[in-house]
Image 1: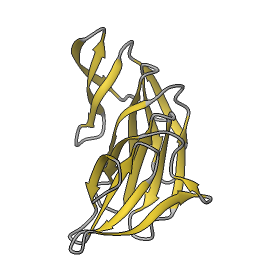
Image 2 (image 1 turned 90 degrees about the vertical axis):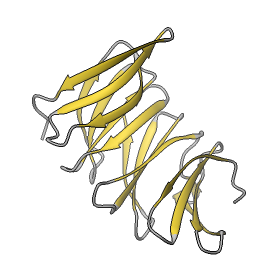
Image 3 (image 1 turned 180 degrees about the horizontal axis):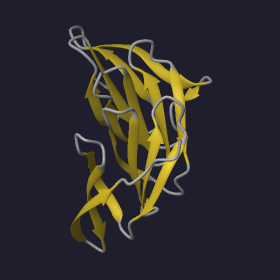
Length: 167
């Protein structure tokens, strides 16, 4: 597979997606190793800068891509069409996760963790944390975000309680 890949994710037994340094999302056929398609946003690359993370929703229906351009995008994992855009971070998005209740959590070099609605891209909550998140997960009950943050090379475990989410 030749795609200048930065990250990848397996969609199913037959397909995978790679995110490239140039902001492309490339769909591959696993059995043949053939490039099938490039996901795009109105004819442009999926993102304006390198892809930093790829995650699937727990039901495997949506693919979330994040980028150094500060945006996240939600794609239909079957049709490969763009569903929503996650716009609000001021710097590179470093990590993401998708919860079982249709929320996306993203961490950014702007030192915020944001919660978004998967289908609409609506920003539901912003949590300033004073460090750059490098890994993020949402607990099964969807009320606690667990992250690892970095500040000046020092790592810290964060547990953020989600009290309420804007409707």
